[in-house]
Image (tube, rainbow, N blue to C red):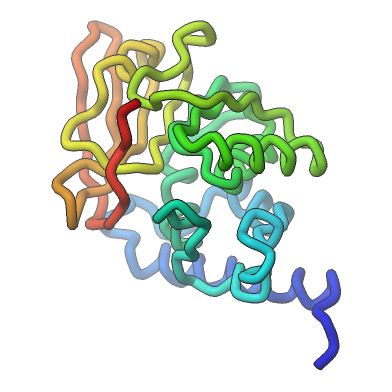
Length: 223
């Protein structure tokens, strides 16, 4: 069989986005909207997801399923990943903190939307692999190895925080590093099932939450 060309991969990427569009329509009551933000959609079409998975899984990168990336971690199902980015409500030039870099796909999407991204990853091998990908593809994403629950205080406050691992409650340090009016998207709940949740920090410092849909993520690790 011939190897896949960039044309083939672009076709698969468009098909992936069409599937995400369908899921958004079906989950519109939970998400609160029936279509992707146009900027998120453009990023999904432009960022080569197959370069952010182990090479042997590149042919599977555009299927609507989670993919293992090593160290008992996965790259989220495309629909869930897209929903999380969309729920951040990003604007160009905003400052975004990501917790859980993995191999870098979510951060690359956010960077493609002209946001400034800082990403914290507890697995050193992932952080190094993601940084290599960002450099090769021209994404301006700062990565460091560390305990994601502590955030990255030196660059706070952030307009939004994306957490790609589950916690029982929003980590206090991450809430404190949100600007007033900032928002966090995080899976909250127990070990086996969580609720994808939008957390907002009000101007008076109080915190509001909105549950979106049930999800399943690995636990947020503490160093």
